[in-house]
Image (tube, rainbow, N blue to C red; front, side, top):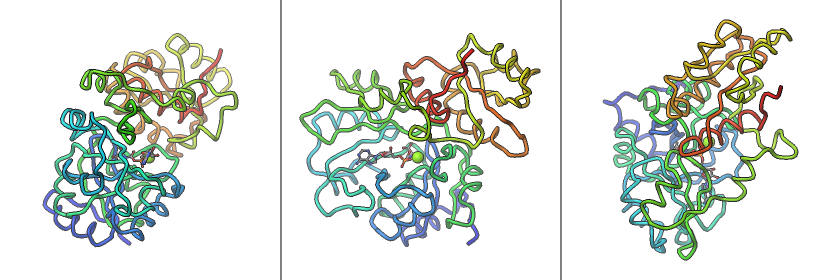
Length: 341
Ligand code: TXA
Ligand code: MG
């Protein structure tokens, strides 16, 4: 199969293919998604096999309006309207209890709940509308690899395996959406995955506290047995996080040991260590926004076999606001490991 690149004049064609059960990757403001008609179980099964994704990991249903969610959900959390009004379209996925027998169980992983998101991308919203069906959309990467933030990343992983890609340049945010559990109408909303919409922003909108999943907090701490269990978003090359005060020691250590080290960091740090490293991927500026936007592209870029790197050093950011989402993804890529003096 030759994977087609759809431009903005071909959105109708992309929508038609999706409706008919073909796989088409789509851009969003977070990362590119692997689109498929959520109502066709066999099509959704293909999504899992193309990505190599475990079947028990449920998918996000992408919609073009909140109205569309009401076809599948009738029991909403009381804060839903406020949250939707403030954050949709946008990088916030909402988990609701669904009506029985409305979505195929392959979408929900057999759960009684489902995840919904209205992405903030004009082309993708138009394609969802034109297709007339909700679209599942896991990140359009091979499972375990960094999520794709450009159409080229999608091509690299899925070329020949899917019908097409709707092209739209680099994604604006660069890390996946915040996942917020609203499935229990009497419970406090709970963040299951940190993203660009923060706990503080949601609390400001609803005027009451939001919980953060304890499991996730545990993941953010250094586990007793670091390694495979926590490894996701990983390039093949080993990744180490570097604390701000450790950069010159880390780079000197690699040089002494004849380790070919690459660096992913802000211009401020990259400029300091450039001459002593084998390759540098620089974020656009010294902000955590630029870091989140560039992290996956940097990991993919420095993982290129032609560079022959032994190790990738990556800058850390404080775990507040967007820094929570950035560090969550980085810790997984690094298997929780920091450079230690
Ligand atoms: O930004 C994003 O969310 C991107 C773009 C393409 O929209 N999509 C994305 O999908 O990241 P994926 O499949 O890589 O991540 C979906 C996350 C997983 O962590 C999954 O476990 C969780 O959402 N999820 C889905 N349904 C759920 C449910 N019913 N309950 C709890 N978690 C759920
Ligand atoms: Mg993913």
